Amino acid sequence: MSVRDRLVSSARRVGLAPPPARSPRTLPVTDSAAEHAAAGGALAPPVVRIPLGGLAARVEALATRRNALLALAVVALAALIVLLVRPTFPNYDSYYSLVWGQELSNGHLPDYDVLRPPTPHPLATLVGLALTPFGGAGDDILVLLSFGSFIALLALLFRFTQLLLGTLVGLVAVVVVLTRTDLEFFTMRAMLDVPFLALVFGAAVLELGRPRRGWPVIALLGLAGLLRPEAWLFTGAYMLWLAPGVPRELLVRYAAAAAVAPVLWLLADWIVAGDPLYSLTSTREVAGEFGRQRGLGSAIGLIPDYLGANERYVNVIAGGLGALLAGALLRRRGALPLVLGGLGLVTFLMISVAGLSVIPRYLLVPSLLANLCVAVALSGWAVATDPRLRRAGAVIALVTLALVVWRLPSYVRDVRKVGGQAHFVSRQHNELGAILSDPQVVPLLRSCRPITTPTHSAIPVIRYETGLPKQALQASIAQTRPPSRGLLLVGRTFNFEPSSARSAVGTSPSAQWWSNRQLFGFRRVAGNTRWRVYAKCG
Image (tube, rainbow, N blue to C red; front, top):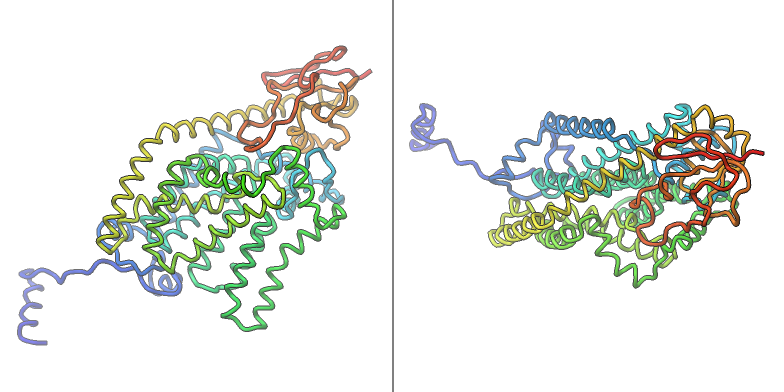
């Protein structure tokens, strides 16, 4: 040490010289965030090569395990409050999973031969089987599991974005995703899309943390592939990515594991329905009944609307700008989200070519990535180091903020709408349960047949709540003539589900002239604010 250095060091010790200037905080360059955590980090920072300064560095300093657990606790508490204030129930598909689970628990194969059957999903049916010991509380537990999946999805989307661009952008991403009222409604209805997304992004987070991780990623994609076949394409692409970097014997084992989900699905269809392609053919038929089929050209034209979800202008315009900024910031490291989004689009177009339902749910992965790009549009400037890129990012952020302010009334309407829909579902199910358990109605459910409902939508709910066989129930929309005897279940509204739960593209069930009304000779047995029961048992 020179004489000058010793003098400066002594001056600093007594406070006469300032400490050495600190360089902007740089996130560690490692192959795995877990490595940094093992080295002493309380919460592994993102695996990025972006020097952070200013706002981004201050937010990064808050990324501790304690704060992460606190944030999770706050989100879980908020979810619990929503459940208590606005309890909801599963949707049509999920109730059939519970019914089929009951049939399995009784030693019978699931009966897919029902009016307008939903596509059977093996993992959902197994969950229904696992919930049978809880009796009538199984539907409530399924909704609770759905909320848990949504919380996990938020955490995984945060981590996914944090690994790429840091904590600040990750936090903004969570806020943007929370504006997705359609996704929140899916959660309230225990729709399988939410756990499917959690599994897919869980696999993506694992792969980002350590490329070519292998078994854990294949396992999560395999579970996702038992919920929705789109995951098979993700798994196939992952196998191509693994192939150059692993020994041949290990690759064969990986390929065998990757084939488990499609083989199990085809096997389940073969055993239950006698046709290994039953899910494909049945879904195509139902799509045709509801008018959900679209050609390739129509499907391409629907992509902007479906990508935008409940807020097309912000998600498409700002998301597009954010995607350009993310590409400039990430370069080669943006390959994973780009492949995820590309495969999601390819799957959607393949669905249209196969004649299946062309609905927004099948673009959820690219749509969520568009939400993450909105977060980049809002906060990407803070992690940009190149002055020109930082200025461009600031302009994009201002444009995005202007869009958000302009569309603020739309966000408010969306929140009110989802609240109204949740209220509708809650009242429909609670009042239906009350009428089915009415002392005047209970004995008639077993002795006075058939039981006619307005549409098919309430049938799996009634079967789950009462244990009635499918032969006991008929939907008026499928009858060729008015019933001459039995029970009439008449609702306050013809449709059992709120409008958002019915086909986003297509036609509603057609009412017969006798649908959802009292018929001559039927006497009133019981009623409440939502439902009335009429009987003619002679």
